[in-house]
Image 1: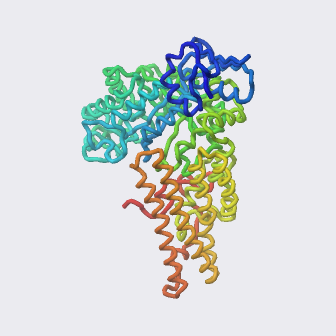
Image 2: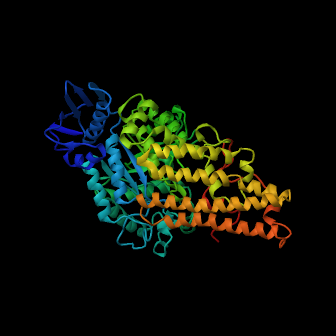
Image 3: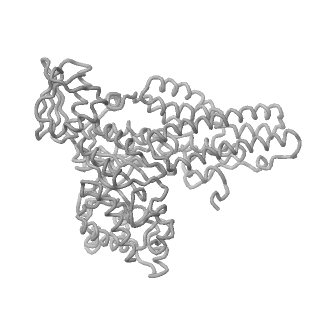
Amino acid sequence: MELYLKGDISAVADGLELVSKRLKIQRSTDGYPIQVKHQQGPLRVVNRSGQGEISFEKPVHFFRAIGLWLENHQKSSEFDITENPQFNMSGVMLDASRNAVPTVADVEKLLQHMAVMGLDTLMLYTEDTYEVKEYPYFGYMRGRYTFEELQACDEYAEKLGIEMIPCIQTLGHLREALKWNYASKIKDTDDILLVDEPKTYDFLESCLKAASEPFRTKRIHIGMDETFQLGLGKYLEKRGYEKHIDLMNRHLQKVIAITDKLGLKPMIWSDMYLPLFAENSPYKDESGSIREDILEGIPEVELVYWNYYQKEQEVYERDFQKHKLLGSTPIFAGGAWTWNGLAPNYGKAIATTEAALAACKQEGIGEIFVTLWGDNGAETPFATAYPIMQLFAEHTYQKEVSIERVSERFEFCSEGHFADFMNLKLLDETPGVMEDNMNTSMTSKVLLYQDSLIGLYDENVRGLSLGKHYQQLVPVLEKAKQENPAWEALFDLYEQLARVLSDKAEIGLKILAAYQNNDFEQMKSILMILDRIQANVDLLRQKHRNVWFSAYKPFGWEVIDIRYGGVITRIDSVKYRIQEWLEGRIPRIEELEEKRLHHDGPWEIVDGLVGGNVYHRIVTAGNFSL
């Protein structure tokens, strides 16, 4: 569509060039006239009597507004829509540390989506995937970003009215960074830095400079979450035991001294301060308030409260109120559940987001963002987060939000059918799994990777008819692939995963039954099924590879290749073992003589869950790395 944009568009002209192709528009003085007003106040889009109007305050509001105008112009000749932003900041955190490092081009693609949705902040989570020139092994062979790459992302974001905020770690979650010998004197445990060691702070100053200098912003997320073993490694050996809170505060004060020196405004995850709020907390006084000496020891820093687990609004409200006892209103981080395994967990993502963002509005939280983590290999493509990003976006501009409206907006902003995307959750939300998969069953992951002969999860799936479930899902995803041409490769990947699991989900149970019944004919037919599984897994690997290399740097794919290769190679050995038994060269198959037990791993102690674990605990009961 040709548009004649009149008025002050100087603040958005560069960004408009970036999104015009996505929006299918061209600027022309012969185009449809739209008066653009850059002014304080709500976002507004109008069309009446052959004239359009857009009012916006922040540049990113303009990009959302022009999308709204185009969407509504397709439906009606006259409309008048006003949106009042509910939050001062609403954005995305993209994990670039758990194996997958998005290319600059893919970050730019994400930024375009965010702009049209109206999301105004992007954090790149980089534990060791940014270049620190003084430490050449930091991020070595991990796809780390160069200064120039980060700067290019920031410049692109700025044109779209999006603030990019670096997000790093300055205490824990540094296992990959600290595994090299250069770090031997600055680590407490395998993944936590050594507090009070001068070399630690030299290292951190280099990291903070390298992470912040490519960006315009002065804000920086410095992490510090989940450091449960703080002070219990080398620190304990050298200096003895010290309370976690005291170590945390002292380290944070030293890091804040560096950020002050660099002119940065830091934020941290708040979870390591949560013990302060406990009912029996030793850090409270007789009145139940947090002791003044404790409060005085916490440096001035913004706190980010992360929670993407509960679907009860009151849980989030109570936690926000507790955070306010520390003297400021926290930032909130929710989750898109891109880290469930191989497929997104949309049920849990939507349930937790609805509850959390309602609480944010109730408690006056001003800043929110949605996390796109990639735990245990980043096997789920980050683009699957777009429906949940859309949900965050609609909550950002409306007090009340319906899934129907989210669906309509998603279809415009992302050129996909929301309902088709929701079917992806059925790869994990299978028979045997609770509604909305709140217990985070990773059904498709454990069934893809578990061994066909040893079958650690076979007892978990017995009686659930999961083969039939996946067989019925194949045509559903095939149809989605046809009806979402912009997402053909993504749905092609998941259609193939369902096809693999339609055979593989219960193959171990079938092998065991044929063996116990001495059914040689059935076992021979199983060999042909194993051939088909083997070929289909390799095709799945290729389709996954296509999706990976369209979005990420190559580093990290070797891990996924090895995982697929393990499945394929093990099937070869399973066929060998069965053939040996069929032909009488071995009297029994020892792997099938062992009594099958329900998988009793640390993530499988609750009902409504078929299975879930990290890769090396799925594929063997042995020690994978030693």
